[in-house]
Image (cartoon, rainbow, N blue to C red; front, side, top):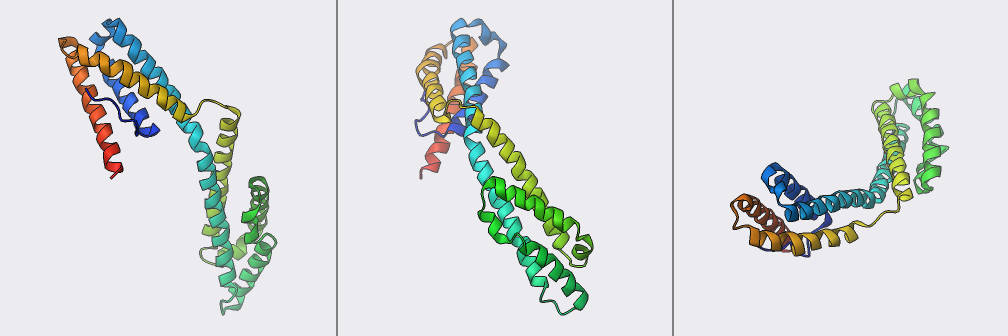
Length: 225
């Protein structure tokens, strides 16, 4: 039976271990094997730790993505309002000028502020725009862009809260857990099932395990080409 390749990604190994644990639990007779039960319990525990570590490692990038989306929402709103000031209809032009004057108190430059400062400025901008609902209604698309900014800021707030929780939990890295889990799979499970595969009670699980490892290794191989 082949071992898991060392080039496997943390997410791929996490998925593989989850699948193997599920397949193991689906065959109740395997629980009678104390050695296999011990190995699988260790794999399951490490898989849970890996999932937690992956989530922690990805929170920072999620926050950056949320910030980028709200930055874009600010820029799009400013560009739309500015464009409307050139419209050749007095009523709509007046509405656009009122909105632009309000937007210009903040400007697109707020996207270069710190996370906290930008959040404060966006909330103030949205509050000011809320008092100009009539002007927004006079210009198609502005209300939608304001709502898009509201949604983007809410998404950033959520990501920021998750980041704060993750930052306070200085746990182990996904890379470290991956190394430990890979060792358990390759140095304990694979050798054991290679021998136990001859037993009727273990044959199906050994075959399934071999197939899942092969599928994972092939995915890694295709990615490297």
